[in-house]
Length: 529
Image 1 (cartoon, rainbow, N blue to C red):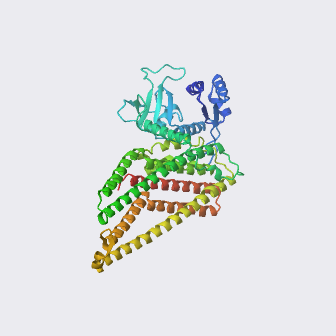
Image 2: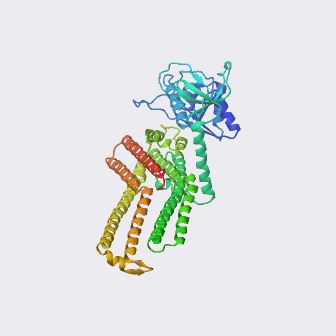
Image 3: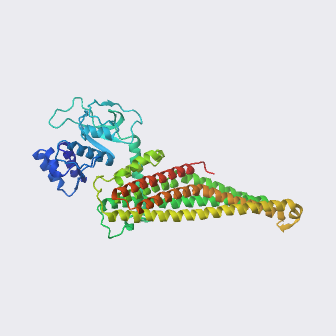
């Protein structure tokens, strides 16, 4: 909302019915010193409109915890840098009304554009010229700036001004021009649209409402300083969770169907081999086989399981951010950085998650630092205690299931050995004892041995497809993270200490979810067994 182009763009946006978040770097009374009388009156009038949400960034705290005074000329750069960082953190696309010239001014247009595109990393204020390059095929990255070349207010238009275009960063003070939005950014927006359309379709068909909500876990008597922003995270969590549950049900049904098909084919083959050598069985066998192949090729393009994974990752990211924001520890954890560090954004269909995370970032990371103790206690009960109990139950259930399966495998192995011993020791008796249908006891025993082996193999394949071992591994690790956090909370550290505990827990929990998803993604994209 600075004097000049910023106010002009805000006016045009409002004329087109676009609501405006007016982010001010400091209190309005202090900000007035950077405006002329006429421009400041325009700013005040804009801020009074109903479509404009006024946001005054909280005073940034330096490393030595010195509270800065925005009236002091020596400190004002810090406030504009804070605003610049806010724009970079929250924006998917920047609109730059700019002359294309470099400037060392911290938080200025050139500084913001270059840092947004990763074309300026050094904190030195040396003014270096900017090199513009022509577009190369598929060269645009995940961040773009739409540039409207124009002269400075009161100055002449730049000579040989270029038409408006997109810019991407290709190195220090090096930018590339693009006629249209292409590359990763455009791809991410298409995938983001797909996400929104799928949720609208889910709602339209009334197949699912929000399957879960995080707000309901909070006690009603706890005063929340940031309820609106928490509800935004809660809505995004419910949206992703509903889609994750929907696609999980579909993919699980598909896995079971393929398991039943595999068992049916094995059973038909054994019946044909040992009892009834009928062409009808072969026709049924072939029908099951071809039906499974057709179904596989028809549904593989719908990516049900991949969508389940990506929506579950998004839902868990929103869950962690929700409780970190509740505990005023969100600014200590950069979820997008963890996404990039894990490498999960490199997988097809996952890159757009960063756009959703950016959209729900807190505008002001310093705004909710001084929360009340009841809100921190609420985080402990609603997140740490809840998740610890959840993972403890899941680990116990999976361990019991794993133990039963191990015993079942041992029993079936012994049964198969006994059948083989019977066939060896009582071969003549087994081959000469008829059971009807012109078949001997040996045929029945080998049939049962084969059926047991097929049932065990199909069950193992199904468990392998569901990756229950990886799931148990993840749940054990998550349980360890929440148990340690609970133990640290019991020591009753100060509020700052609790925030650090929450931040460490958030990082560990998110990275655990991302690594498990990577394992599951690779398992899903192996050749079908």
